[in-house]
Length: 308
Image (cartoon, rainbow, N blue to C red):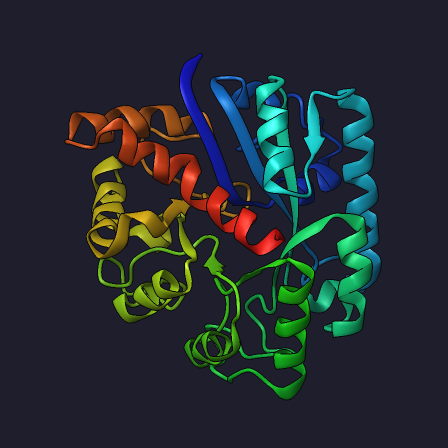
C-alpha cells in the first residue's frame, strides 16, 4: 500500500455493476474496493447515469440507487456514504473507503429543480445538468444551446442546497451561462485540456481560468479519446496535467471517467493505475505537495466550500 490519498470525481461503476451483477468488492471493472486498498485513503464520486438506460431515466435512477444500496449492505461498512467533506475525512481516518453520490444528466430527476431537494435527501452531492443530449435545462457539448430559464433555476437551487454543479458535458455557452450565475465553486469533474486534445468534451484555457476564478476544479479524464488520438501514454497524461497546472495547480483534480470509457492510457487498467501515474509524475519533477493537491486536496476543498 502506498501512502497516497485519492479523491476521484467521476466513475460509472454502479451502472456496470447493475448490468453484470458483480460486486463492488471485487470485479472486472476499473473500480473495486480491492483496487482501492492500494491507497492509504480513497474517496470516489459514484455517478448515476440514466440517459441511455433500458427504461425511462427516473425509473432507472431508482433502480441504480437500489443496486448501490445492496452493494453497501454486502460491504458491511467497508464503504461509507459521505455527505460532507468532514465525513470523508472521518471515513479515511477510520481506514474506510468513502463514497459520494452524483447524478450525470438531470434526466434522472426529470430535469425538475423541485426534485433536487429529494435527491439531496438521498445523498446526492454533485449534479451535471446534461449528458451528451440537450434537455430542458441546457445544451450539451454536442448540441451547443445555452442555459434555459429552467436551467438557471436548477443551478441556483442545486448550489443553494450545497450540491456541486458539474459542467463536464455542458455546451460552451451553457458553461459561460452557469459561470454568470454561480455563487459557489463549480467543477468539470472529468474534462481535459483542449489545448492538448481538441475534443468538444475538453476545456479551453479560458474555461479553465474561469473555473479557477470561481474556486472550482477540473478533473483529469483518462479516456484515451479525450487525451489524444492514438498511442496514449503516461506522457500524454502528464502534458494535460502540466498544461492546466501552469494556469493554476490549485484547481486541478482527478476524474478518471472510470467504467465510462473503453480505452485508457498505456499502463493503466483501473484506479490502482493512479499509483503508477503518481510515480511517473514524481520522476518528472512533481513534488509531494503538488501531487497531494491534485490527488486529493483540491477537490476536497470544493466539496467543503459547496456544502457549507
